[in-house]
Amino acid sequence: MPKRSSKQKDTQQLARSVLDQIAPDADVTPESEPPKKNPAAVALGRLGGMKGGKARAAALTAKKRSEIAKKAAAARWGKKAD
Image 1 (cartoon, helix red, strand yellow):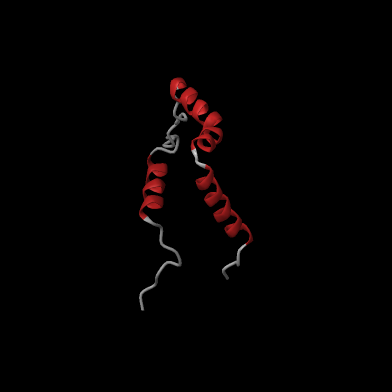
Image 2 (cartoon, rainbow, N blue to C red; image 1 turned 135 degrees about the horizontal axis):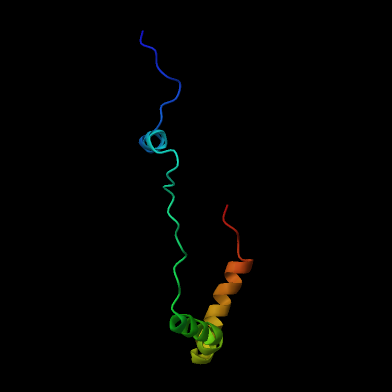
């Protein structure tokens, strides 16, 4: 019967070990900077987030607000599914 190794390396591990044997000093991990955010977009997002709930509540009718509140109460206090 042929002998088999207990563990086989996957292709990425094998490629890394070959690279380490060829050039042990090579660092293949890229130095990546986090993506920089556009300051104008950040300001607009913050502006929308600050007025979000209040603006939505002002735009809703009393009937719609009542429906939303009933649905929330049913979800909060209703029968829990197992």
